[in-house]
Length: 252
Image (tube, rainbow, N blue to C red):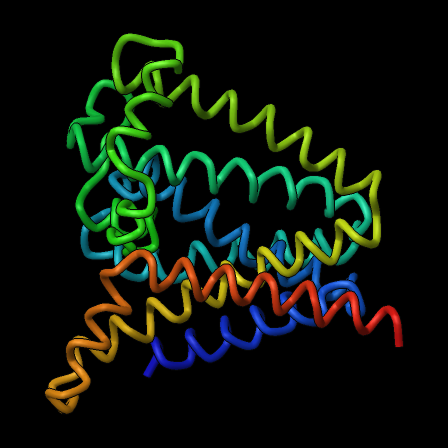
């Protein structure tokens, strides 16, 4: 029941951001702040906090902590919505780039002990449970990119990636603030589409685990859950649709 309510809530948030992000700009910044806050809380849990929480309280902590951080950032983003645009754009860019890099390192090395310690559950949370997304970029292509990253170990390279991603995120945030309306429509469509992609993957995961799922639907659900191209094309289609709807709304 909780998972279903969560998916519906995030689905509504994703739709509002993707298709009405500019028209409802201040409210959109609050939604984006809540989503980014939850992602930040998951990162903090995975890297620093969860292992310090008594085991009997971990499940409750994992449920409450992201919501609290999300609500705090939502309120803050609503209050300073113009400035929040910069920070949300910066963090979203940083998070996306680091997540892609982590997927590759986890897939090929399975060893981040020198820099970061992640349990299997934490990895699933950090990567949205979308292991299939790793297939979008071949190991050979990522290997060439990773070879150019400073550092001799996975930990050093990951630290360098975090700093590089932060710099790129700052540049993206500045660019979006300078371009204003067109960029706001694009970034809200992208973030909204990212939320809806996560909702799609969550729904596929629930269906895959549903014992009453008709057998003829199983292959389609499995493709939706594990084939990274499926979620990628859905994400891309949502971005295109969201930008188109928002641009047309401005013309009417």
